View (cartoon, helix red, strand yellow):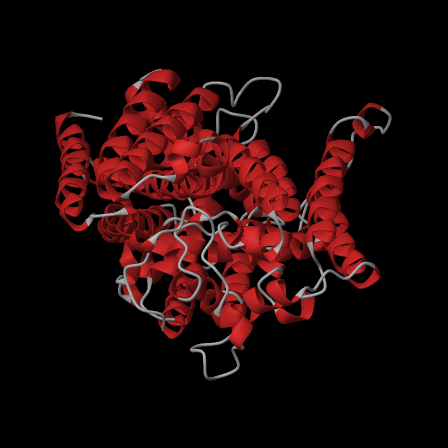
Length: 527
């Protein structure tokens, strides 16, 4: 990087902070901070949903998969995400929006107290927060890895800089700042991605290879196959189920985008927009990665530095800075949205259980608590980021695929399926059992079993077995030991219907807001 690249990067940071300061004026209470008061346009929610779904891990971990295996990076990652969100646009997005508009909650997990019980809500809240700390830690490590390639900056310095900038704008501006910065980041990403795409196509032309002829090159032998290596059919199916839950609210931050729109219909439209972006845009980003074996020789065994090396070689200064800003835009979008989601879970779901004083928070004190929690979460995730390359986590892609994907099912299944009428029989026993034994299954296939199996358990089973265990137990126990009380049925009806006159019951209309949810939580009338 030279002075021009640094100017682009510093200018980007300045704009992000300025957006946060401007968004501060739109935040008057916790509803504005966590769900934008239900006033976010559907198109902004859709772009924000898309941008908050991936980070610089795309340019490190998945760049390595593209360098080693080729198009399977798209087939087994962004394609199942796009399909999962498209399914969720009908299945989950409208119902999650009604959590805010009809149950008057500001956190995606608040409704679990009435849908199941307090123990279930706390189990999912604590495990979700801990997983998110690890997940976001991997994202900080990914962007710091890229920064070190371009600047020579140490891993810890990169983590500190990106974390500090993100903390400023997302802490003062809340979800509005997240969404508006993600809109700006989307534009930057568009320019950077197209620049890199064009640079690679031109370079292939200079080598006499051509756009389509590249696939016949020996270096790309087998790279056109959709399912190769550890990324086979079982992995694809497991990932589809995982992403169906994760990207429709299971990881909490995407749920907030659905809650932030004005109505269930708008939430559905925002999800469809996000699904289209996930289907089309990653192809532009992945193409240079698929071509990378023809252009660079990765220094790292997993190829995770291939995209950064290619960027250095192909782009002039200025554009190089723009692409680096693109790296930051992905990571900061995801991490800031995660921080906001976890702050919502802690202040709305956990703190009122731990402290009597928290149950009496007013609009101002609740907002202060939300901002403090955001800073604490970011600090903890940055601390974890410094350990991502330790023997416990091994590397970035291990954290993202094995830990996050493997643990997603047990946490998300009770939350997401609890919204749907067909699973109304499943109550606290089904939820807690599927959660607990799903986590146990994750441990058994990732650690103790590995000691006795040559080469360990294949990756596809590491991510699929915990999901399968949780899903089967949740359904079976619901039928064997149904716990569909009138109060729980009322909650389900509230999130499955619009208005009290189109299927909701009198009992449903009387469902109380969760503990800690006062009048300051809701910014709009029920849709």
